[in-house]
Length: 393
Image (cartoon, rainbow, N blue to C red):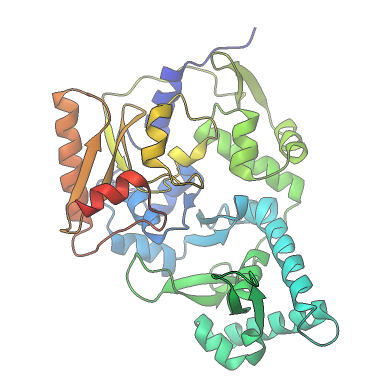
């Protein structure tokens, strides 16, 4: 008979392992990120606010140093073709389990489109452009996309996107070519121009972050290692959770699971997986509150969310493509949402009565977050109904 892990136990694990029930003190950014495996980084502000929610003392400057000076964290296009911030010690696992395959798909698509506009062999033409960009970045140490396109005219080659549509038009290949090179592991997004909410990055050779480049790793081994790390942070999880979170097909996912030592558990009507040495109950933490940003790794960690999110709350908190906005958590459940108002204060709303003491804790955390963001206005890249309403109020 399979062991049972209740929803209450899952919420206790989430609170403890994701540094939400007890915020860390004195922990380096990369240590916190490794406990979460990765941070969603499509929205630059989410990286900083996800760490701020879990630490008593991390500043935006300390997070920036880890990203761009110490380089213990690296931006990568990985699972589900999504941007993540990854500890450099985990980067090879993400690269060989996910990024290489993403790069291959993106490059095939670009070569096919280039075939109609460049002379001769489009694959060879693109390879020569790629080599030119890498050589220039190695020579200069870093450059913006604008500077690279000025130095390499072929990056200004244009493709017509969405022909005949009002939103269509000719677009240079610069961004796509750079994205592919980064996913291949040849270059990396460096420091952005502007503050910690900015997203126009300088590009740099990978050697600036990893002097020897990405260590070689068999894709099957990399996928198994990623599943092992995912279950350590998010287990128990279902196979459907794994397929969704990784973006892999069922076959690759199940093969990866078969390579590690797991136990099947009963989640109350469906089967889940945990690491074989992770079946023991965990102590329930003291009552806790957290205000998590848009695209935080915790709510984005599972496909099946009913054990921590009431279905009735989804419409207010998610956009049409499944991106979650800023959320309020109480003891492992989503109980409301928040936004950064035009006046610089955090505005919030609860969906349910959590009691006077916990509501006061939400107000205190909103005040702390207001102070943390002082002088910077944060609007999520993907706006959600409740966030837009609160931000405008």
